[in-house]
Image (tube, rainbow, N blue to C red):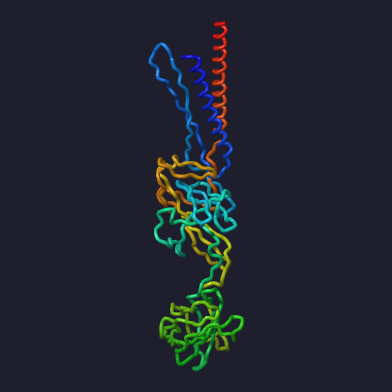
Amino acid sequence: MSLGNAINTAVSALNAQSQAISIISDNISNSSTVGYKATTASFSSLVTQNYSSSSYASGGVAVTDSRNVGLQGLIESSTISTNLALDGGGFFVVGELGNNGTADIAYTRNGEFSADKDGYLATSSGYVLMGYRVDADGNAIDGDVFTTDDLEAIDVDIVSGLAQASSTVTLSAGLPADAAVGDSVSLDVQFYDSLGVAHSTTLTYTKTGTNEWQMSYGDATDPDDPTSVTGTSSGTTYDLVFDTSGNLSSVSPSPVELTFTGITSGAANVSLTLDIQDSGSLTQYAAQDDEIDIELYSLDVDGARYGRYTSVEIDEDGLVTANFDNGLSLAIYKIPVATFANPNALQALSNNVFLPTVDSGNYILKDAGEGTAGLIRSSSVESSTVDIADEFSRMIIAQQAYSAASKVVTTADDMIDTLMSAIR
C-alpha cells in the first residue's frame, strides 16, 4: 500500500462523511416540515483488486442516500379543517396549475392544505389538491376513476350557494268531528321552490257529510303578502273519509299531490306530496273548545331557502362536503389516494413532493382505506419522521470519522515529508 493510496482512501472518507453531514443537516432543517421523510446515509466499501499477498491496496468508501418514504410519521392535530394527514400508505395527488388550467401532477404526504384566493385547496408552495367530482350521493359523476387525467383541482368555491325545493309535506292534525256539514277549516303551509324562494298555500277542509270531508288548496302566494299570487294551483280536490273511530280510512284520488305551475320567481314547477295517510296523521275528533277549527299537531315541510357556502368538511374516506348557512350540505369532490409498489424509489423534488420512477412503479389510484391506501384524517397533519436525537448521534459519529480521516491525511503527509528529508 502506497502513501498515495492511503491519502486517496482518507480523502474518500472525508467526502463520504461530508455528504453524511449534509444529509444530517438536511434532516435537521426539515424536522418541522409536514410530511417530510428523513434521509439516511448508507456507506459501502470500495475494494481495489489485489493480486499480491505481500502488499495491500487500499480502496475507500462510497456513500448513498436512502429515504424511507413509506415510514408513517406521527399524526398531529391542526386547527385548520382542510389540513389532512394520511393514516397509512399512499400519497395525495397534487398539481401545479398552468395558465391553460392543466396540472403537472406530483405526489406528496404533505397535507397542509388550505383554500387559496381562487378557492383551491393548496399547500403554501402552490401545489393544489386533486380529486374528482361526485354527485350528491358521493358517486363519481364521470364513472370510474383510474388515471390522474380524470382528476381536477379541488375548488371549494365551486358551489357558492345551495337551495332545495320542497317535495314532501308531512301533516299531523285533527279535524273537528262536531263541525256542521258545509263548515270549513283551513291551514297555511309554507314551502320552497328550486331557487330557494318561499311560497305559501292554504289547505281548506270542508265537511261534506258524516265522517266525510273534501280538501282543496289555493294558489301559491307570497308569505309576506297573501294577495300576491306566485304560482297557480292545479285545483285538484280530494275526498277524505273517516271511520267511526276518527281515523282516516280513504283518500281519493291518492296520493295527495299539491302542484303549482307558473312560478313567478322563474323556478321550476313545484309538486308537493302531502303525507296524511300514515296511521294517526289526520284524524277526526271533537273540537277542543267552542271554536270549530283544525287542531295542528305537527307540520314538517322539507326543502330550504337559498344558503351561502360557509365551510367544507372532509371525512376519512376522502369525501369533500360543502356546508351552507341554511343547514344543507352537498358532496362535491372525493380525494383519491395514490399508491406505489416501491414508494422508497420515488424521486424527491423540492417542496416535499415526489415523482414516480421506473423502480417505484406507476401509481394506482384507490379510495382512502382501500387496500394499502391509508385513511384521510382531517384537521390533522403528518409530522416529519426526523428524530433529532438520532441525527445528533449520527452527527457525532460523522464528525469523529471525518476528524480521523483528516488525521490520516496529516499523518501520510508527515510520512512523505520524512521520506523527502531522507532523500535530501
